Structures are given as structure tokens and as C-alpha cells.
Image (tube, rainbow, N blue to C red; front, side, top):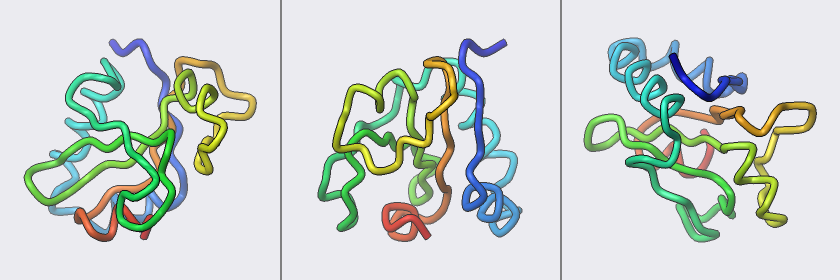
Length: 109
């Protein structure tokens, strides 16, 4: 059982369907993120792929796929976070923004 609650943005749900062949790997990574969103993930900066992703985190799925997400308790402390969709959500919420190949994920496609 996870300590964190999940919220999925429409882009994440769309890409999960799009990359159906990796669905089980992606779901395993999501489960690990929900168990501990800080373990094995990377805090992103303003130059990750050209977007300002400060406040977001990245988790690998295999060697070339990434899950991009925010942890509400963390992104609320980063005023520059442009992807903090945590209004009305408790601090123990993880908002999954997108998933995809490395280059596509970091430009939020």
C-alpha cells in the first residue's frame, strides 16, 4: 500500500495508451513512485529538455523512457514550478504529468 495518492493528467493517460507495449513496466514504476517518490528519481531543473521543469521529477522506465511527475508537498515549496497542479490536493499527492521516450517526455509531449 502506498503512502501517496495518484492524480493522472490527461497527457499521461493518453501516452499510457499510446505506449501500450510498455504499460506493465510503466505501471510498476508508478507503483514504486507512489511508495517513495524521492527514491531513484531525479529533481529537474530549468534546462531539462528546454522547458522550465523546476519542481518536477523524472523516473526512468527502462533506459530511454521517463515518467515526469510532481510531488505536491515538494512543488508547493518551489515558487517557479509551472506544473504544480496541486490546488485542492493534499501534500501526499503525486501528479503524473507525462510518460514517453526521453526526448518527448522532457518537452511534455
